[in-house]
Structure formats: C-alpha cells, structure tokens
Image (cartoon, rainbow, N blue to C red; front, side, top):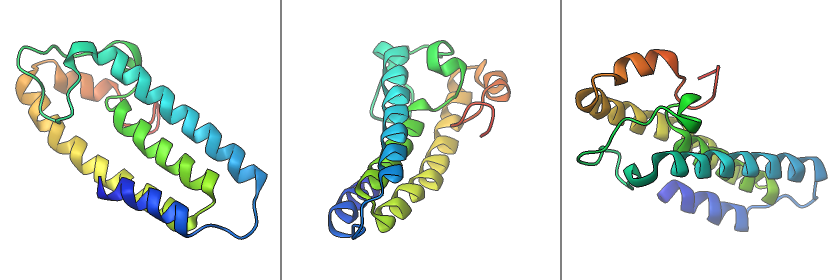
Length: 138
C-alpha cells in the first residue's frame, strides 16, 4: 500500500515539464493491459478471491482463464497499472516507485506459493507449467 501511495504522490508532485505523447500512449497501453490482467484474474478466481495471500478455506486451485497463462495476474495488473499511471503522468520518480512493486510482489508471491504448495498437491506441477507474472517470460 505504501508503494502504491508513493506512485500516486510522486506522480502528482514530480512531473516532467514537457509532455511526451509517446509516453502517454505507452502508459495507456500498460494501464489497459494491467486492468485486463486484474479483471481477468478477479473473474477467474470468483469466490476464491481474497485480499489475503493465504488461500481461503475450502477454496479450489484455479488454473483456467488468465491463470492458464500466469500464476499471479492480480500482481501483474497492479505492477502494469502503476507503471502505466507513472508514464501517463510522466513522473520518473513515480515510475521508479512502480518498478519497486516488482520485487515486492515477487517476494509476496514466493511466500504465497509456499502456502499454495501446502494446500494444493497439484500446485507444484502447475508452477512448472506457468510463469509467475509475464506469460512465456517470467
């Protein structure tokens, strides 16, 4: 939450003097892609959706929809959306704060995956087939 507030605050206070249309377009693309990951992840999780990283009681392992492409689409959505916002606002300090979200969510995902492996016997195999945040990349 602190990093998201940093992205917002820095984007409002530390902006480029000159506007660059190319950065705005790139930011809109990142924002739209981030929103797509977030919405697709939320819809695929359905009743399994929780604000906490630990799986809900009686939840099932979701491997369909966007989860057939990446293991943590909600985190991807937040990272892309934050980077997109920073680009739209043309704030380099905000972009740095947005990029710091990547190692933060990577660490959070590692912890979450320990719980998922303990809860779902199929998770370890799923992990080997799907990338964490970016399809076919990472």
